[in-house]
Amino acid sequence: MAGIRGRGATQNNESDRFSTAQRLEDGDWRDMAADVDGVAAPPRTSVTIERARTIIARNASPDIGFDQSINPYRGCEHGCIYCFARPSHAWHDLSPGLDFETKLFAKPDAAALLRRELGRRGYVVSPIAMGTNTDPYQPIERDWHITRQCIEVLAETRHPLFITTKSDRVLRDIDLLSAMARDNLVAVGISVTTLDAKVASTLEPRATHPERRIAAIARLADAGVPVHACVSPVIPAITDHEIETIVARVAAAGAQGVFWIPVRLPHEVAPLFRAWLDAHYPDRASKVMAIIRDIRGGRDNDPRFGHRMRGQGVWAELIRARFAKAKAKAGLPETRTVLRSDLFRPPEGDQLRLL
Image: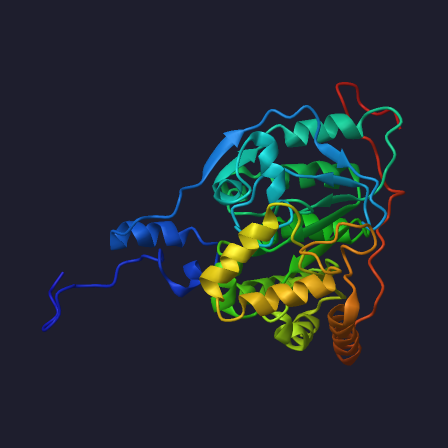
């Protein structure tokens, strides 16, 4: 190939490691950038196989709209500083801080366990939720495919499913989800905390870019999958100024509803969140915590059922009023999607079904 006068390279080669499209996806590109720049890389992600005995978790919480859930992974690489699930890592004698987002556990037997549990005599059908503790579409799902394997079992058995995620990786399973949606068996919630990429880069550093989440809402809606937006958590003096804009954007993209929760700071999450504020928003850290305490009855966190998801006081009422007005302006209803549970058929075991 002939050279180009005045230029060193003879051609453009194909590389998208640091392209805009790559940076709009999950944050793995940060590790590669550190390698190239020769600077200290952030702690690398490790994955340990967990051989679980069961996969369906059950709860009796009166302020949660489901009683069954599946978590294909423990820990979450998205690294959302506000994640209320962080304290669960302490059960493994690991820190709810960096360990929670770097030392992950995968359950490769999840689909087989699910098939076994759905086939048990006396199993009572009710919607299963995914994404309630850690994100089922966090970056390691790209390699492990455990979430997809579980959805395949639920699609086969015609079992109702709710999914909540911050990743547009959910679109890779749109074939399964659109088929389930035709029988009213699935609904997806896309979490949109902020539209500001700079804020998102520290608040939820390895989650999908906000614009890709908006695009995922549109793709799901076009495919006939019921989708709503979860504007959670709302963080006063950090993201609350975006309420009206986020509601308008997700409604225009095709979301059927919008739900929100004020930031929760249970147990070890509170000191982690305070440290994050000191590092990234020292100018308003005391203001943010003062408003949070007002919403939480004078404490960093209020764990009471019926209060933890809503908050109290003048700030909580103001946010609630703003959401109501924004949803009304966007034409979004207050109702939630109700899925069918009457189509369930137990999985086939070694012996085929007779009927």
